[in-house]
Image 1 (cartoon, rainbow, N blue to C red):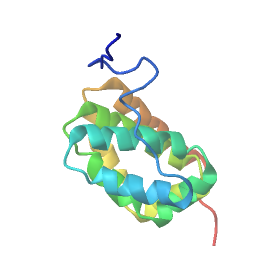
Image 2 (cartoon, helix red, strand yellow):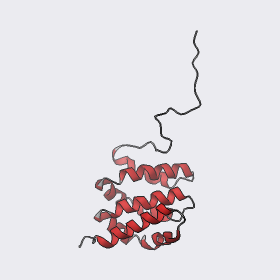
Image 3 (cartoon, one colour):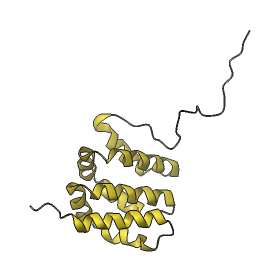
Image 4 (cartoon, one colour):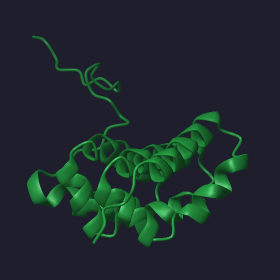
Length: 143
C-alpha cells in the first residue's frame, strides 16, 4: 500500500514574499498592523502587498486617511535595504495622486525622504528622486 509523504519544500506556485491579504475594507487596516510587526519578513511582505494595492486611487485615499504615511515615514530610517526600497517605491506611487501629494506634504515626509540622498542602494535614491519630481511638477489641489 502507498504511503503519503509530506515534502519540506514549498509548492512551486507559492511566493514567500507575498503576504496573504484580507479582502475589501479590512485589507489596508490589516497591512497597517503588519507594518508595525517586529519580524522583518512580516514588514517586507506587508510592504510588497501595499505596493500592489496603492496603484488603485481608492486605496491611496484610504491609506492616507488611515495614517499610513506616518508608518512609511518611520520606515525610511530602517536598516534593511528592502524596506527602504519598497517604502520609497510606495511613496513614489502615492505621490502620483493628488491626495497622496497632499498627504506627503502634510505629514512632513520630505525631510526624512531627503536623508536617502546618500543611500547606498541605487533604487532607493532613484525612487526618492522620482517622488520629489512628482511633488515638484504636479501641483497640489487648491482648496
